[in-house]
Length: 582
Figure 1 (cartoon, rainbow, N blue to C red):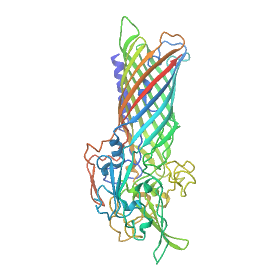
Figure 2 (figure 1 turned 180 degrees about the vertical axis):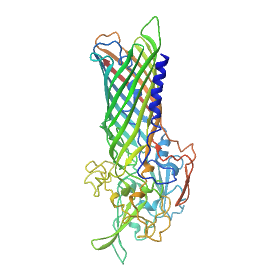
Figure 3 (figure 1 turned 90 degrees about the horizontal axis):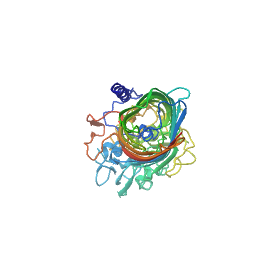
Figure 4 (figure 1 turned 120 degrees about the vertical axis):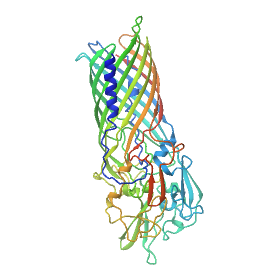
């Protein structure tokens, strides 16, 4: 018995350790010393939950001395909700948060001058130069799901042979909890003197969510015409977004090569079909069901050992169970948006411009940088592991489970040469062409326009106070200094490395069940359980700031920078698990 427990622990630890040694390579290495924010929150798929799968039916699966087919089917409704919104906010906004949850948006000519370190410059959002406002966030994720789970023991063909499959039908709601305010609307024209005040926006949300842009300015008195592009990607919206889909379908085929009433040890092959949704990048806090459209392949182990059994009652015992799985997530096409390497976090909200002759008229076109950096990439994950270890106490028809779960996912890898379907025109319906909070599903992976292919080192430059001049050292906090010669943006300026994410969480779970073992052909069972998961990241309320910015082009950080953020979410869940064995 002791040797078997050591083997089980060793294999489970091997699954966990594989997360650490996974390949962390990426296409672009920026040498950017600033602590990165996470442009994308990649939480674990609701299908990846070894704890929920293990609890509540240990007396119905992996049975010994069966010479026939047998099985068990369970239905598990569950509700989960995130907690510690400060940690989620810290992953999204990090250094710039004030009072744990707020961002100041201050114009370059406001009565209270932007501090150049944490305040966002209102000029970049088509707002007046003396605008003074901001917004707060309190992110919350909710899931309501029904997990359908089937176990089939095929002992009639081979002792210990089994197949299991499960698929959660999932509704998810992601709410950034955004509340915007404008203390001073402002009266001065926007980022360029050629933009008259009547054309600037009055509301930060008009820019960040509603798809509003200034009206075009005609060429006059030798000045160029001005055209403006709305924000298509990384939108910040005060409304919540929901998604309903079938999460990843996971299937295992395995063999319990050691199988007894008091212990078992088996191995299985696992495959997962991606039936959820994929990231489209339109919103900073985008609802996701599943793993992002990646096919999965891997394997795992299933095991248990009865540590004590009553001599008077055979059905009174105490045991230890371990289920673990490791999978690789293959390339999946996703639309992601990125910051710029040299210009730091949130530079996706800076303004860029291009100058060209349009219909014989000298024209300057402005666009948020997110519209330039967003593009289709292929995303893969080297290793994902989920390990559940659980104690079970059974007394007759009653069962009680108490366990721990570890989940980890190595850093994402981007294939940077996959921009085959970059839209350059807006969709005819949906969020790309309207100011609603809906999604557009009629274009390619990147559903809204993206000008990534125009990052060719000769078209786009960062905008500043002087129309037609570049400001290559600008960041979200300051305009920077004008360049002596115009500096152009290229694809090598896109910070792919800073956008990578990984996952690491720890969970405790419990379950109480009742089993009708006195039935013969069909044995029903019913129970209630819960889980509390502790994700990664630190809350801005009780931790020192990571970054300090001294000038618009100089940023320093301490050792908390990792280049691959842990975006696992802290959440709790309650479930009811019921089923029937046959």
